[in-house]
View (cartoon, rainbow, N blue to C red):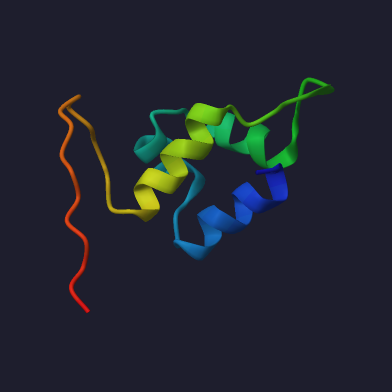
Amino acid sequence: MNGKQFKKWRKYRNLSQKKAGELLGLKARMIQYYESGEREGKKVKIPKSIRLACYALDEGVVDYDGEYTKRRKSSP
């Protein structure tokens, strides 16, 4: 996920930078850095943990308590 894709992810979900930061446990400023791809002239890469958190949010996971819960497969 690059900055452009990250911004597209956020906008598609109608999240402000502040709200996306709250959901991901980040400050809005970090969201800005990830979207622009740089911070103080240096390249910024979106960490795997943030990319996975975006995926988790898409799957409806807003928090995780460490317990493993096997998902049931959907019935046809």
